[in-house]
Length: 216
Image 1 (cartoon, rainbow, N blue to C red):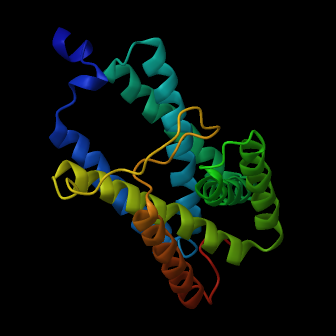
Image 2 (cartoon, rainbow, N blue to C red; image 1 turned 90 degrees about the horizontal axis):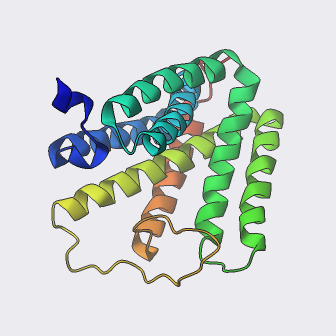
């Protein structure tokens, strides 16, 4: 029991870490191809992931990576975040639009060393949130497709790296002192895969989402 209570994040075996990655791949598929069709579920999931990860990160910092504390914080914070975005529909729409737009801007400007790059990401993210309130369906389809395709490509690349499938593919070189930290393993090949998956997800959602979304 004492060993369980003192387990830290770095002690997690690789097999369990891969389960988290597989979960991210599943979540990415839901976001990418079914985002607007199951919009209220996606809003709740977004709240869970955002609030839960923030709470777990804070507790992990304060407890030096204690896994039990981080797990409890993840569940409590995640449930609170999920309920907030699930029941506060317009707030959830704004948050999801902001995250989707900021993610696209982040991928575009991450190599820019100028100080304005960070503000461009923030500004475009907020613009995406307000735009989502005005034209909900296309912006939600685009935002969820962008988020889902990023989860799919990034989690998939980490799994492929851990399996040794990317040993001969060097990671993209990065300059020190960048304004924005790079998205891991986002070379040109992964960037194109993300963009193509995102466009495919957007197309599938717009074709299948001709009826009323589940979010109302």
